[in-house]
Structures are given as structure tokens and as C-alpha cells.
Length: 125
Length: 106
Image 1 (tube, each protein chain N blue to C red):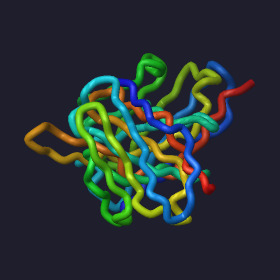
Image 2: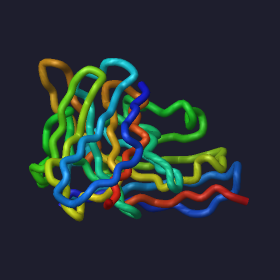
Image 3: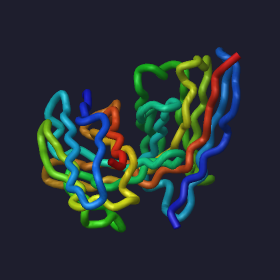
């Protein structure tokens, strides 16, 4: 069974740091781009960052650039999100997601499947 | 790329045909996905590449569109379909989602 399990969430003060982990199983982790997506309480979904199979390409949403770092360890089938200088607006459930893809004559279609169950990060004093 | 869904909420009855629309702020070809989310749960993929039904998803769900305008249609609503639906573009990073459409029981 393809599965993603996040951990590492919790309560942290503004300006603090937290490291999220995502353990993958049931598929060849090293073959896939991976993403982090977050959802603030009662709000919609926001893509945060993604990383290429070998870690050589990384992209972030502007609001976390310079504060968050995505990384992976293919030997441990794990994805990470190091979050520094946390702000109240970073409070959210953080999901990791696999990025399957399919090439066509038009280019490459990408989607998120599966998603982990999520881990809650609360930034508050 | 901004994604705009309409309506933001919708009341419907079991058996109804429902359509949700998603508009992109620029052309995204067919790089559009649809997800269903129930309270307290992770999103679930329904449709990828605008019209491709994810394995295991009931055939009452369908997607269409290309360029800037897309639709998700549920042909005959079932009780388990009451949830929030999101569109998402994968044309370019930052990947962006619509604001969501909450489908409620009438």
C-alpha cells in the first residue's frame, strides 16, 4: 500500500523552528518529486514547496522563501521540511504529497497523490 | 497563476447533477486537477490532467476543459459526495489551488 506519514508538528513560539518529516512506503520514493502542502484552520490549500527526485531542483512559494527548507533522504525514504522564523500565519496542517507525472505531446501533467494524513503546526505565544 | 472556483458553496440533493467551475488567470493547457476533501481528512485526488479519472474514483465524477476554463461534474450526487472540492493547476510553480467549493446537503 502506498503510504505517506507525517510527523514533527506541534506548538512553537513565533520566531521558533520546527522540522517536519514524512515517511514514505509502498512505492519507489527516489523516482518521484515530492511536495509539501499546507492548510490553515478553516482555510483552503496552499502549496509550499517541492523537490526533485535527486534533490537537484527545489521550488518554494514566495511566503516561505528564506525561512523554510525542503530536503529528502532517498536512503531513508523520507521527506523533510525545516521551518525557521515561524510566524502566526504559518499555523496550518502540513501535508506531504507524492507528485506522479505523465508525459504527453503537450508536456508533463503532474498531480498530488497520495497525501499523508497531515501534521498540525501551531505558532503561538 | 490564480485559480477561481465557482460557486464557493452549493446546496444540492441526493441524485442531483452538479457542476463546479474553475477558471485560471492564464492558459494552463490541460494541467488541471480536482480533489475532494472531507472534514478532518486529507484531500483525495479525483481527476488529473483535466479529464482523467483517478483509479478507484466512481464514474459519476468527470472533468472537462482546457486553456482557462474547466468543470467538474458529478452526474448523480451520492450521500458520500458532500464535501469540499478544490481545483489545482500544475502548469507552473507555485502550484495554486482554487478557494474551494463546499457542497452541502439541501
